[in-house]
Length: 395
Image (tube, rainbow, N blue to C red; front, side, top):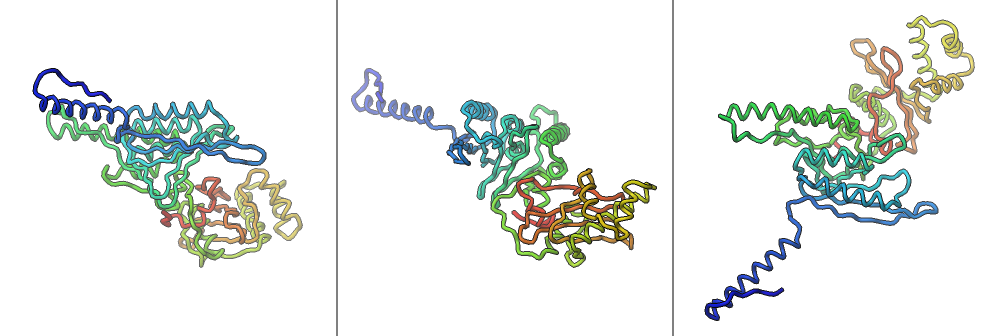
């Protein structure tokens, strides 16, 4: 680096001026070379993975810092380069975006989320990291490119923090008075909330858990902590340890989650059935509904014949399941839970379990209108979520 010294003056003055100029050049160089500490930063880590007879690449993009205008453009440029490079395993995401940010501009968060769905980029918040506000909004875009379109792919490592809160508009400095500024802020806040809800629906999610966060004061953060919240937002926990529990406790939690918490987790009210008894009980429910609908002959007659002790329980059960009735795959153990209300059955549930594999289970709800699929489900990659109580804090 060369310092330029002005002509004239004493030697001491010239030396002082030289030091000042040199210092200014150093400062200028630092500002040009060092990245701004307040801006979003992206760092790509690429690994080579051997799967079968092939070797593929796996990319993880570490995103840190606030969401500010222009950050999504930088991310898009990175994703375009990774897409052009290719080499990822078929069916995998283009990359995984690891997030660590307190948030920032809402518009940038939504744009990042849409980019993730467009390119098929999964999201993760790792243990000890946090993803808050607009970062959490971006997180919801995590997806893998499936044959029929984007498939949700979001992970939260136990110990990581994912937090949502209400977004607000800044006070209007041009307003005539505080009341006018506040009224305008409320109006704009409602409009912003509507935009956020529309975005959540676009991501294929039930907006109810986000709405719960939006109605709270902006300074209050709503963290994703319970098993039910993980399920509602289609998030898989990473490094989640399964608790020790009996099969009846597992069945109780499965039914609790299948009903979105409407059936309480009361294992003492769960009754064990053999697989054959469970099949006959469920076929009896179908026969009961057929009778209420005044269905005669055909399948109704076959149901009555089987239930009177004739053969063919297994065949008829399989036939009705193949026809689309929500009959669960029958496992080694079956548990039935019924919740009476003033002597009248309001809802019941049948859970079938594999004792040696907690992730292998089936479940069906039994309502006054017949058999029904679970009111909610877990992401395919983490069925073990159903083994925890719906309102149980797991993170």
